[in-house]
Image 1 (tube, rainbow, N blue to C red):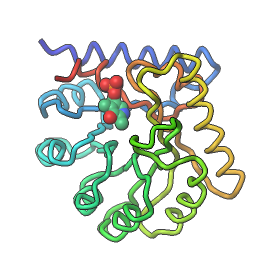
Image 2: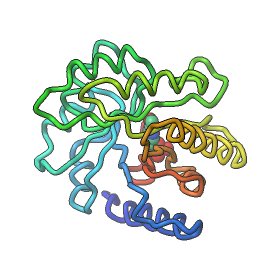
Image 3: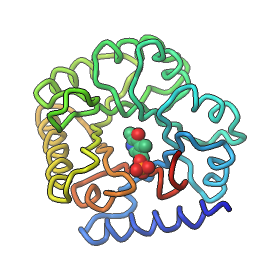
Length: 227
Ligand SMILES: *Cc1c(COP(=O)(O)O)cnc(C)c1O
């Protein structure tokens, strides 16, 4: 049974309550529905319930949905790890990329972004845990990456993204999200104009909103558990 409209309503209500609880305008928090691994029919069900922004992790899984979507007023966000041999297709089919962490990928996305399309909107992924295996640029490398990306044509640097350790305590989540906000503020003090903090998923959206999230990326609580 398809409970997507009801689940969407509940997630929107959680966002509204979380924003209000910390004195923020709920309209300043954008809901990105993460439809990875889910069928096109689920995306359409969410669309019919008013959702317009969708996040996907895997290019091959996303393309049939992007190309098959009957509506054109949909914004696709690539939130997965970027592979070098996929940058051309990513740059052609998505409006946003959230997981950029290497200058080389930025250069390729810039080169392949079709001139007739709007600039590709970009968030830099920051790795705030000590795990080298995880995606994201280290905080001390972030300013150099931000400068390099800001100089590339056809990309528009919008902000920062992070994926905290899934087993983090609530205190550790607050600390990680707050750290991302401070990194954004510091870049802005040095001349950037970043308006986006992409942080918060199904289990921690309230914490992320309390720390300033402007985009929350929600999969499970809209579309149900993934296999
Ligand atoms: C899968 C995924 C999400 C959504 O996670 P849920 O816990 O299902 O809400 C958000 N961001 C990224 C980068 C993801 O890969």
